[in-house]
Image 1 (cartoon, one colour):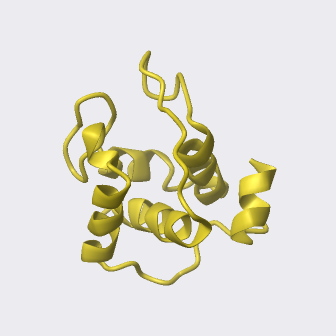
Image 2 (cartoon, helix red, strand yellow):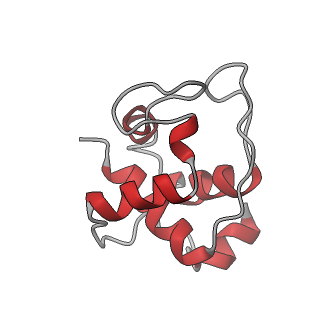
Length: 106
């Protein structure tokens, strides 16, 4: 996780405060094929909705770095038995993707 935090320049900041347009976030979702397991507001084939993820982490000060870590390194056990594979997402896209996911809490 520290590697991802340094790579993104997070330094404990939970969100950049810069809104990510829905179409930009959806484009990143498509680009990295996240929709094969996740959908914005409905449960996906193997994973929770991005809205559910955003709600779960809404009050977590480490949400941004934790979600970035999960995207890059994968995760298991947070949402059941299905493990998430890590993906090679460049830092600039990762930053926008995670911020967009967290914005879906409303």
